[in-house]
Length: 354
Ligand code: PMP
Image (tube, rainbow, N blue to C red; front, side, top):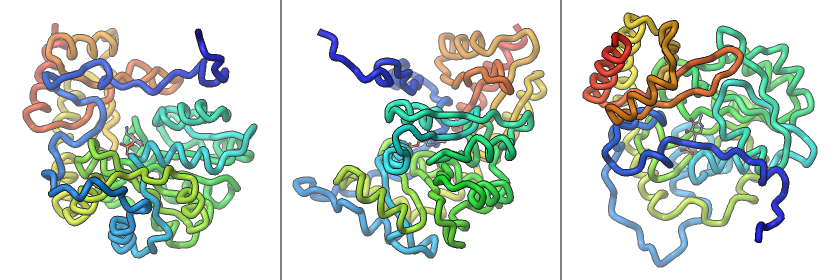
């Protein structure tokens, strides 16, 4: 018998990833903006018969010390995806809205749909910037606004002046998703965490161990925000959302930030010749500042076809970006190891010249 589902759940289009389809180890994954190498080997395991510290205070203290904020400004999540979900569940009242931009990270819309709240996305300008007047207008009645900086999939960060205006002029809670924030740090772009420290009361900034830290497998993200907002998130999160192994690995990784920063700089350097070659091959490239870039194949060449041939002929997995009014026929490529990058480039060259 089919259970009677709430209509928003029955109609849900879940977040999809090639990882559900391409299982096993025989793939070159350049689709999910992970690091091509692990950030750390496993440290020794903590005792597993006991529940973990529910609020992971050692790790929160380490993060707090780095940013010169207090433990009460930080909450951890089982990946930043959990924190996105918690923000919607904590701060969006029934019948109210979530507002973001398009194109951006799909999970904001999926979590809104699961929660049964409406999600509105304001199209970016043709230069891929937030259309500030349209965003301020659409966001007037929103309870939560998501801005991803650097944005996925464009890789561009939101100028501080724009962000400051949004945070100042809107009453809703602005969640700035800095999943690729360490790449912006390397590019000398200030984090929105600075605005939390300057006293913004309606701002939450998300970061993750999944990208620059090379630890997508441990599922760990953190939010930095004003104490009253973080307090609400701490109250509604599942009691033991970050397990003991993840807390231990997270703490060890936090002590290896210098290595992380070197890897970030290296990935950004490795991206440069990839971007140049794609341009020489006639692609339109949006390089961005993170560990991935967007391409639109030359006129007459189809992104779906290229994606399929890379996957089926070379087992290289990249990501198709949904067509939007300002971005059609686009593919997103994650910078891999030098060997993977060379293999991607030579395969793309031969596909485009055949
Ligand atoms: N935000 C953005 C913009 C992302 O691209 C991703 C990863 N796909 C996430 C959040 C989720 O990261 P996590 O692994 O920490 O859940």
